[in-house]
Length: 349
Ligand code: 1HN
Image (cartoon, rainbow, N blue to C red; front, top):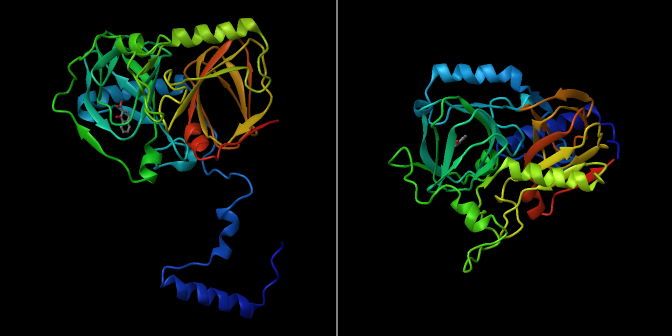
């Protein structure tokens, strides 16, 4: 319905009324209703690309300015260009590039925010989650569920860089953030490396293990090698999906649910030369190229991306991908939250 033209007198009466009720901390709904309940999502966040080649040196510079110990976490936050100052890459998610230099330790702490790591560059670092260390290898997807103790260290001779993804904006929105530092900077190992994968990650669980549906997974590392093998197997079977090619969802192997309740993670293989049809969904998503190179079109923008480049696609923006060579992408989003709330939608164009 187009609004009825207003006389100057009517306009002035309304303005005077709005100003008067402002003193009561009130405002008229009818002036904002359209913006509050848009017909389709109108994200403030915009599509953006961080080329690893351009930002790697900035991350290394941070390594000369401050130690991991002093910083607690030496991270350069990837801020959505339309949300500067808010420490977020989408409305609901945080992302950053973390650097740990040989010999350094990022001290143990825990918080109610959930975190994921995607290892990008260098070898020799480990992360420890609730008393178990895992060696970080490129492409590994590692999680730190809410309120688990975690510290990182670098026992090798190379700088190691990974992408952090956290649900910081979600926890901030809910005002549910708690955090504490451990008394010792590195956790004492309670179990040998690989223990959680042996117990929970071999298509079996301990005989008396009975997880509640909402529990985060006990498997906290998803090695790239395994994901790539699965994707290559799908490729060999043929029949890529026209919109998604070969795309898998990381799960808690004991429940089939997302590894963490607030962040979903995905791995996708595009065969050489494959072009996906346009696809959009309501979960603003962070994509990372782990292997190969591809052209990504997001709305009107087209970017050529290669290894370690990060692209964010806001809610309901159309994405299509064309792979120059066989390419593998990792991605993460708030999809499990939206699904739990009955909000998630997708459209295949
Ligand atoms: C955090 O604990 C880590 O443990 C990384 O590596 C980034 C950003 C905000 C708050 C906590 C980490 C973080 C963080």
